Length: 353
Image 1 (spheres, rainbow, N blue to C red):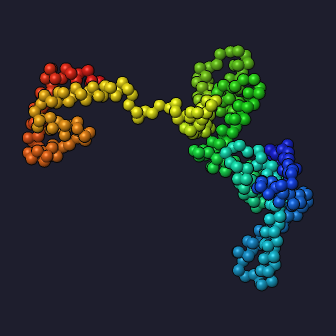
Image 2: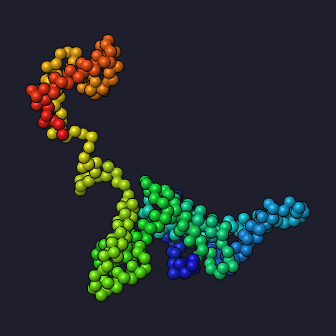
Image 3: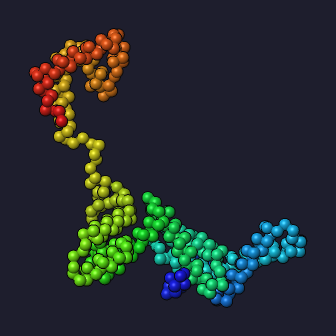
């Protein structure tokens, strides 16, 4: 399966991109020049190195598991282990330019080119560890899969402000590829339902039934139509997830003299109508409270937080005036009865909602 996936993939040699004598100020070009000094391997060389690596791994296991080895056997296995590590290193170094070629395809995904190369190198080392030459395919074919996987996972983990799980990133990439293909095919932006159909988000029998109905111009079964709409909703949800957050400092307009944040309403700010209404209510309330005696007014202000916005218990108000909580309750009840009188309550009725 790996061979089939990459048999038509041709990667340009990144070393051919080098030009100009001054490389000292460009770390990428310096790196390319350095890895370009390592000779490429033939298929036979890859097999030889892979065999040495496998012998080294087996020797390492022998050294760890068997405590009854003679000194001569131990030295022999130690030499094989060291030789395997050297072969592993050379196989990796000879394929570093493959990592660069693969990494180029991921430029613009939220990570720098050097970071992409670094993550790809980790995938390359994993490929070196697991390569089995007996399966018959080239090392570059096998390594490409591991390099791509390592880079894709790094992008999923590091490139976004809000992390998206790897499986969802793969789904987003598949949707983007489907979208581009349908755009070229239709000459317009595809709908969510068309994308859902192409991505096989419906069971095979549903997909076949929809295509047949569309081809024959016959109505689609209502139950099938509902399932299709649900699949389209899933497409729209994936598109929403794929969107990157925007900075409130993003410039807006051709002159870039304003930012996105300037056009977003501050919901914590009281509007002019509400502010005027609140001020009128406060004035009306003060006018009504002034018709009570001083103690009644103070009791209501403390109980309902009319003065400082903080309500108080009967005990707290009683301690303030040096009376019992029951006496405060009586004063409060009497004051509220006065406020309910139609002459006073009429002024506040319009503020009730």
